[in-house]
Image (cartoon, rainbow, N blue to C red):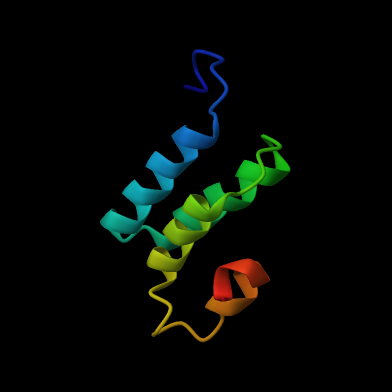
Length: 74
């Protein structure tokens, strides 16, 4: 997509984050999650945060709550 100057949208990021989670590419997925907002100015949705929660396998990672907005914890 970058080579063709195509800007990803929110749905693209859900697909990429899901793929990272499935493939166990946690570090890469978190980098992409950060770029989503900082570079592409896409506000994360519940679907994006669910992908991040899956990536962090939140029962094994003590820092997962710090990445999720308060609304996702209710």
